[in-house]
Image 1: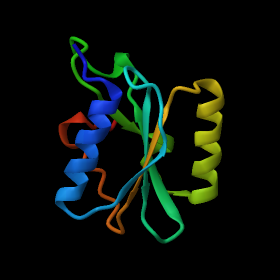
Image 2: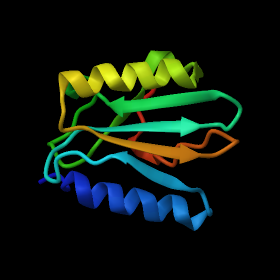
Image 3: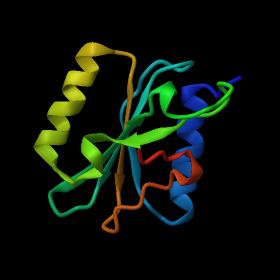
Image 4: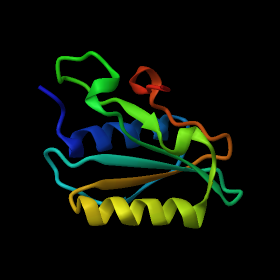
Length: 116
């Protein structure tokens, strides 16, 4: 069984906190199963975006969450990233949006990250 979105978000915030990296919940989604989008703000006007990986991208029994960089992992200008998130919100109003502030662009997703 997969962790509820609200529990995963709490754990992710704590993980970032270990390295004193601020994370803000910009939009609170559905507690149980809301999709989560992560915006890594490099504090130079650019951001890197992560969203849920399609289930066809990995072999899993439904227990974990996996992430793919959006737009090929290329840095986006912050206004472009915000437009992308606005479109996602219109498509699914139950999404979560987290914003991480880290000049190094670290995502802290570890083995949950799928790059292709």
